[in-house]
Image 1 (tube, rainbow, N blue to C red):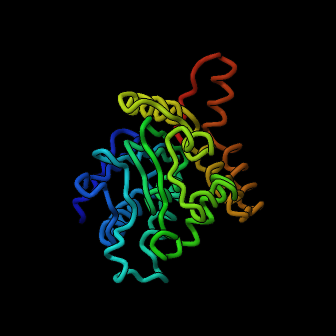
Image 2 (cartoon, rainbow, N blue to C red):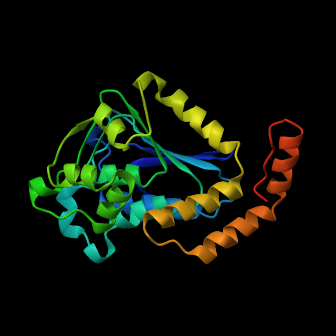
Length: 251
């Protein structure tokens, strides 16, 4: 197992921390494989309600290790496999960007459901500067998250964007001072954790399917039906009638 990241589960929250600050949390093929396999083990944990992805040091993630490109099998690109895994985690995910994010690190951030950035950070995606083609799933995700115009600014103009620009184009959902990052992340975790897990899991999958142009109406309707037949729907209605906070169990 790679020592470049740490995973912790506390109550209903999964926290993943990239921990190679000397190299700006760069992702080697081994790190990407190990992280994907570790997340695969957590995927079916029905107790989890939210995940946090963050980093140690001045940067969130400098992307894939370009010095290792010769070891990549592009039919099974480790970056694509990792970001697809993160996007498909059934519970909501929050990327707490502790600093700058570059290259494939931006795709890792966009594979999460929410992104909280810090003032002073920046983002730069350099494939056209070094003569490579960004993974197509990452390009698809960027267009789905940001729109075609901002995606072209990143990939065709190679613009380095400030925290304020990242907020303006929708890359960041929230922007705070570094000193407030942990608190804002905790607030969002608390807010999400109080909601109905079956509702969140079903709607996350449906929303992502819509964004990819892959909406399966039958699957979405089945998720609707599951929620309507759940104990949580009974609890939610009772809580609303009694003017109290619902206690959802995910059943």
